[in-house]
Image (tube, rainbow, N blue to C red; front, side, top):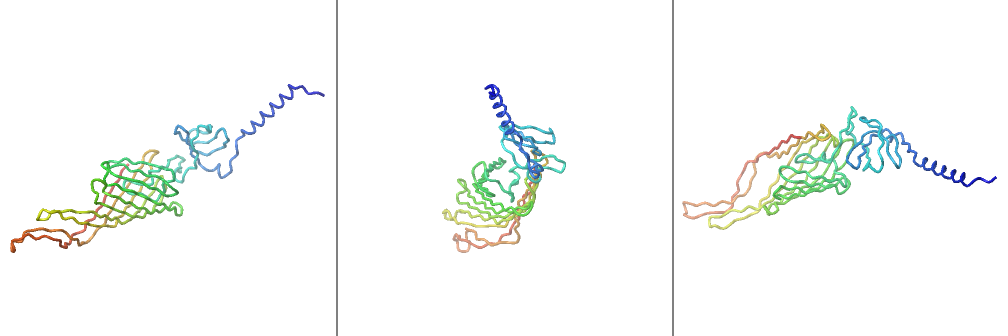
Length: 298
């Protein structure tokens, strides 16, 4: 029996259509994947948070708390990531983490700046540029609005157990054009508990500076010499996000200095006994003074 060509063609079209439908069937998720909470960011910046029900090459079906089930076309999705610990609150609300949570007003913590992350802080004092150049490694540069001092920074984060992180860092700088004789360095270590939604941090380091002083002697000649000094520095800081866009931040900068220290200073005076001017250097004892800066804010 001869089968008409039209019937054969119709069967072929039907088979192709069925194969395409089969190819578009949504992929089932594993039990572990279906229990995770995901954050889907669209190209326009909109975010959807919830559990992914299913997905295929064309679209993703996500179960959200606010809107229920939502289909999102693949071509509109910028990225999909697993929600970090601390972002999903016990009530089910979502508080997004952010790269700014890796530091405070002055000090920084042990949370890593991920590779490829970049942020800029604009403050009353000046700009601060930070770049994630490797896994747990960040570098940056900070200065004032007049370009002095100019300070470079590097920090390596060390993830520990659970919510604990540590870090080692170094700040090195110069007085640049205004104070070319000034150089400073501050190696430090930090220990942090928490995440990018809330955390508390303890840091300690030793800051040293060297600079050139200049004084005028009795004969009118300039007398210059290089001074060096340093001190231990401590900080207790923390932050907590109280909404999607606002964080409560507490920062401190403490320089504990007690007792006295000896230094040399230049002197010049007229000796009435000899009728001559005398000048030179003498050793003097001075009191040490502690410094504490406390910065709460939003």
